[in-house]
Image (cartoon, rainbow, N blue to C red; front, side, top):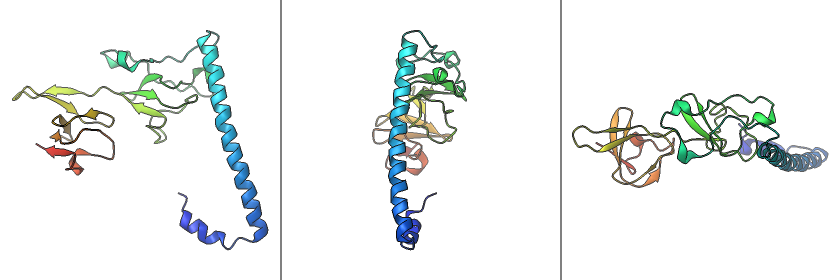
Amino acid sequence: MFDYDEWITHITEVPEDKLRLLGIEGARERTRREAQTSAEQAQAEVVKELQDAGKLPLPDALTDPEELPADTSDVPEWVDPGVDHSAMYREGDIVRHNGRIVRSTHKGLNSWEPGALGLDGRIWEDITPAETTEDPATGETITEWRPGIAVTAGMKLTYNGATYEVIQAHTTASHWLPDALPALYKKL
C-alpha cells in the first residue's frame, strides 16, 4: 500500500533534475488516465449502440431489479466475458454469482468477476432479496441481515444466530454489523 508520509519524506532527497522528471511523468500519467477513462466510455457507448441496433449480441442478463423472478435460479449466471467487448456487462445488468444476485454499477463495459477484486459497490452491487421468516411467537417478519438492505426503526433482523431490532433507519453496510453497533441495533 502507498504510504504518503514515507514517500514525502524521501522526496526531499530527490535531486532537482529527477524531481523535474517526476513532475513531467506525473503529468503524463494524469493525462493517460483521463484519456483512458474517455476511451472506455466511448467504447462502451459504441458497443451499446451496436447491441441496441441488434448488430452485436447482448450478454445474458436481466435489466430490471423490480422484476426479479421469484426463483433466483432463473436469473442468468455470470459468465466471464474475457476480452469480448460485446459479452461484457453494461451498467444495470443483473446476474447471479455464487448464490448472490448482483447488478453492474460500472459506467463502462464490465468484465470483472463479482467480488473478485474487492470492488463490490463500485463495480457490482449485491441486490439479493433478503430472506425473511416469521416469528412463530409473535407473527412478526424477521429479515436476514446482509449489506445493502434499507431498514426502518422497529424492524427485526437476524445476524449470526441472534435477533436484533433496528433502532435507527439506515441502509445496512458491511462495516456496520449488528453485534458491534448498539446505536443502530438492539439485541433481543
